Image (cartoon, rainbow, N blue to C red; front, side, top):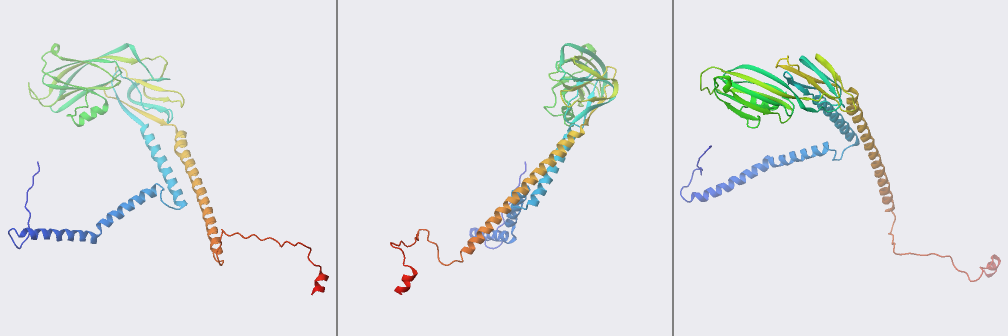
Length: 395
């Protein structure tokens, strides 16, 4: 808890109760001085000016202020180039490569395959694998499974851990038997992100599927046994940790770990093998239809098999979406801005002509009375007008 205490200093001068009046007056003058100084410094005005400048900048970038057509065109092309560059870069980075960890007898479908942006998928493995191509999304074979067993002797030092990971398809089951000679903790973790979260902070509560406290085991028949069923297809890790809570002996904890897997596999009907026991495999991806890529790790491979999946870009699609389309949009918007600008100039010129005509008409004397109407008609003669000779004789 943070605690602070202090007193108020009223300054020199009178004491006693009368000092209260002096304190009140002093407070008024101090407050008045502060407000006056704030006005003289112009801090409030600077804040308002800064806010107005920021608002104007936002409106300017959104093309909502009055500006020249040339400025609007420049902003239009800037946004087209910026949007195309950022979008193309993010999409290319998203589909560029994926790093996967694989274990013996892992059968895994490669994610992030886009037939729009990838013309082929290159699988680079540290050991020999088999690669299959499906014309549709692969389905899990629920009627059969593959068994795999592995016995491991682990030595886990204090404040350290060791884990083993397998990619399990939905419905696969695992029987894990652990017999340590000292106390150990068992974490069952699903997903690489959750494993990284646990490594960063072992006290996380939502980064593991289950936690088990394992006691001392003298012989294998008294070992702790755990049954795990994969609820979804994902990477599963079985992690043993020595948190330095020794109850038997100092030093590292020795453990005998037996792993028995009952794996589900994909239904291979409708698939074709692309690469057979190769380190690198290039799988073409047609632009139409659905294509899935599955790789299989043979049982003789080691636990540290690393697989990197690369997307070979479909270049013409990037050119079409992030070059031709932005240029077309920028050109159309530029033509629209120029057309609106010409129309606005014509209207302004007509308005100026009308104003000039009105100003000239104002120079006439008098005023027009629209309510007064005068009808002029020719004289009505009842008889024919006199001839020239008669007019001369009368004159």
